[in-house]
Length: 84
Image (cartoon, rainbow, N blue to C red):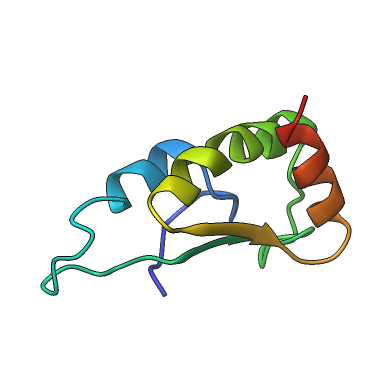
């Protein structure tokens, strides 16, 4: 797990992008999953534009062999937004 400090508990692409480097280098953390939940640990909920940004980022992450997913009702929305 890589902890990211956020004021509201929500992941943002500009926080994730810098972590997707140095794949194959055993001296660096190799992130493999980006996971969002319907409600964060802080009780906040992702907006549709925030989910859309993550969905649009998914192909770039997958190219780096990083899975993007979610739990519960967010998953169908995340997949649906990716294709629109």
